Image (cartoon, rainbow, N blue to C red; front, top):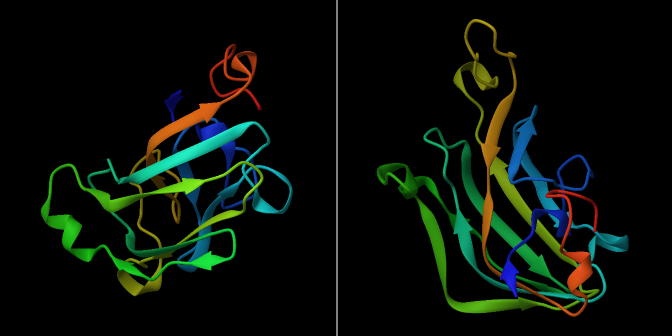
Length: 156
């Protein structure tokens, strides 16, 4: 067992994740994370015990999320209240299991800034771009140890 590995997931642009930080250039409803295998599945020989989601950024641009595991869709979770907390996270009452070769999709509403635009990032920053971390909390179980050893962020 180990913590949930970002390499088991693709980001919103369909690239396999090497870390939890994502770059967003559009607002509105969108898929922000999927399984990294074919058809958005978790790769073979891995199982994920999902306990919650952490949002470690000071500025939050996600106001709601919803997710789908296999053929089961889960309802919306409103996140606007989390702006009141220093280290916001959602911890599920009952953990969820994402089996190997089971589909996973995480959807979010990314709130637009002033004038329905993404925020300005100041001198030296890239305008109309948001850098945000969405960290899945829980554990990854694997059957082949050598698949999780090696370079951090390497493709699984």
